[in-house]
Image 1 (tube, helix red, strand yellow):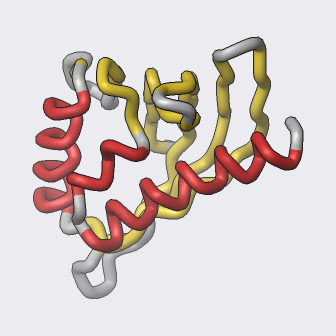
Image 2: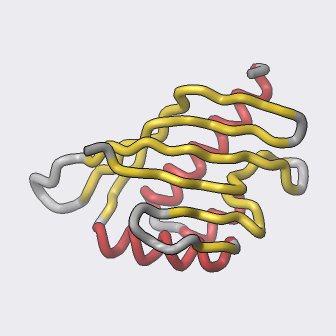
Amino acid sequence: MSPTMQADVARTNRAFEEVVAARNVAALDGVYTADARILPPGGEMIQGRENIKTFWANAMAGLNVKACRLETVTFELSGDTGYEIGRATLEFAAEGAAPMSAKYVVIWKQEDGAWKWAVDIWNPNA
């Protein structure tokens, strides 16, 4: 991955971390493509940025998430599409709550000159 692409991926991933920390789902416009899909564990597929915003608002509030850290393990680029395999760590606001680790795959697409998440799937580690 080129240094420019690496910076773009890191910028978008940091934006998602900031969304979680501030619970600012409006900022997901800079993370997901307009027609993105998410495939949450144990749930139905959700399509469209506005529906994804609703999902994350409910998930963050329901789980009382206070922080998320994303770590890219590998990223491959092919034309205007890329895919990322990574690890995530969620921290919760409840006192004494243990962090949760997960793995994820994101398919990236360019939209309006920016690299964004087009497909997002994750699963917690056992």
